[in-house]
Length: 251
Length: 195
Image (cartoon, rainbow over all chains, first blue to last red):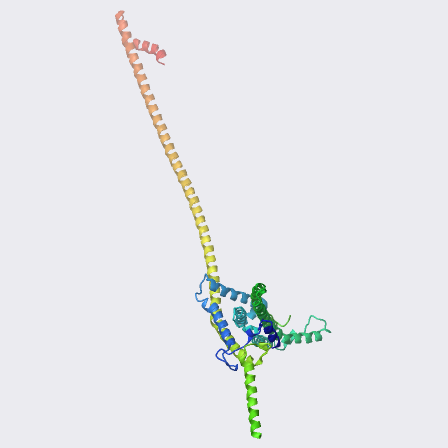
């Protein structure tokens, strides 16, 4: 509140965080768990866009694909190969979920870059649920597939015996930190990029600075397109790596 | 007094409530990180789970099997086409081999026919030559025979003429014609001439 007041005094108004506000779609009021909000709207848009690409785009089932079908096949092929390469053949069973995750994050990040858009992946509540879902399912799969042997993941048998208990403590801590880093990495990247863009755009109110400001916004936008794709890729490949640990806990 | 105080207290309380509400919803600007506003968490989590469930269902039931089918169809079509091409190539090779073989056969057949014709002609030629030789021999023998006959008749004629001439000569010189003597004389003279 204090910084806002200062900005107004200087003739500038920075509200870089306003874009992340969760508001009800219809009218004012409290945000209950069932209220349709801007989060709901953008989740819906993301889902519709993914369905448009993967379902409507492949409607033709053409042997020689058109452009949309090529893109859909490219996304499929890339994710499939990633799952196969990282987790091995037995990880392909979980390919649909990983593909869902990848497409959801990629489309959320990309659609969030549209002006006036709301980026659902910039919220820790969303990425936290995604990361926790991965963490819990990977842990469950690990114990279901390997039983108690899954704990061998924390017992580095290639290290000297003296070091093993210490390494085990570090491994356990790093295992439980996984969902935190997994979720904060994505949300932080998205939030920071959008906030920076808003701040640069705010400087455009001053006529002298505005050309530099607009150039900076353009540059940051290009960078953000890259970040949006890379973060979706990173989240997905880390999911694959965690899944590999669960399927083959022996290093 | 007491009632008045109570009234003031309630109005004051109402005012503060209104102010708090205005602060919460009235202003559009965010205070602090909206990401850490835990009151919106249930809403976000609920709608996220709904979206993810729907997306997972759509992808795993419709989109991914369809794309997998399209990709495997394409792979199959490519493999099929390649195999068909290989087959056609094999067929072309076989056809070429068959053509070469037919050509070689035809050539051998022609050679054989030429050889057979040559042998036949040779045989006919040999027969014709032999026939001609035989004919020539026969004709020569016949000619020889006739020559001998002519020679013999010529010799007889000469003998006859000689005899007649001798008898005529003897009679004209006035001698008596002794036929046997004349004959022997002519024979003796002719022996040397006609041999």
